[in-house]
Length: 231
Image (tube, rainbow, N blue to C red; front, side, top):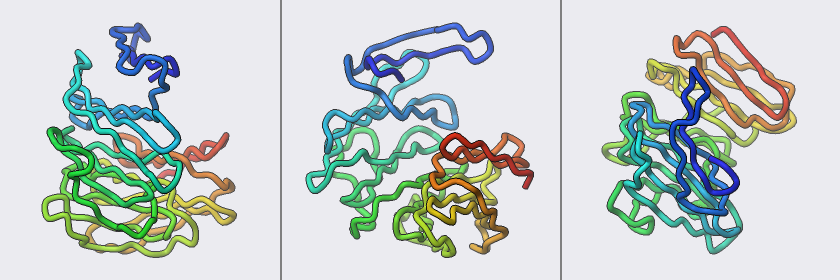
């Protein structure tokens, strides 16, 4: 996604641009997220300080499948979103709470969870699409059953805001990162809900956490610093 409102598909190996469209001319498009099955693309754009647009596009032609306008009347913010592995659903969180949205439904129709004014900075679907992990300013990680929309577990241990979450490729472990003066990365066993280990990091802002495809390496990007661990 680009600041001029254009969206480009670029071939990973050759670096050649394959297609470019302008879904929102003049509006910066960020973030952009592929579904795990590679069939859909989730695109976010902030239209106003308290209004964002979320678009679900079909690959490779980038045609629009669904779009939602997300408003936060009480404060200025850009909601956080995550796309389901099959690209049929998104979970979106803001100051007003957390919603699940599917194509064909308006943003106002999505089921709302956690109406406690805690924005969830960390959002991720398990690879099988059965669980969603949510974490934010209250320092607790919630696990939700996607089918029933019910909470099925809590992971406690972070002393600061949970800023990023990512399931391992096999879905058996969950990595979480917190931001603050004592920033940490924690690894959790999803089945037992137990903490496996804690890693201290020398950065106040943990922005992105990822796994290697084989699940043996954990990557954390926090500000200008890149951390790698064999786990």
